[in-house]
Length: 86
Image 1 (cartoon, helix red, strand yellow):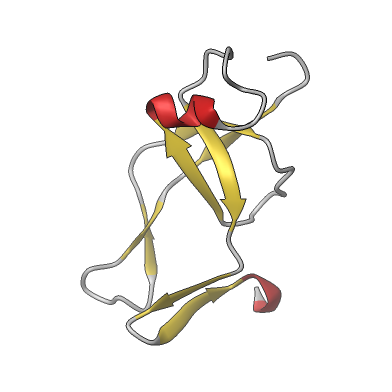
Image 2 (cartoon, helix red, strand yellow):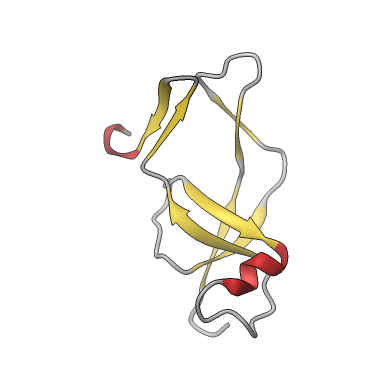
């Protein structure tokens, strides 16, 4: 684990009442960042045994890992997030 960056993640959920918006989840996740994402970027992560399948983490004692940086999110034909216009 030496030299690995850890991130605190707050999951973002599509709001059931207004699907054109996100609402913050209630839990906080500590994840290993293998991609070098920046502060405020929307990321995709996985948890559990799948997290150890990420490159170079097979023997690491981790439970969550960042596996992607999100460019845009489209819900019901409407773009609700775009990293370029953020």
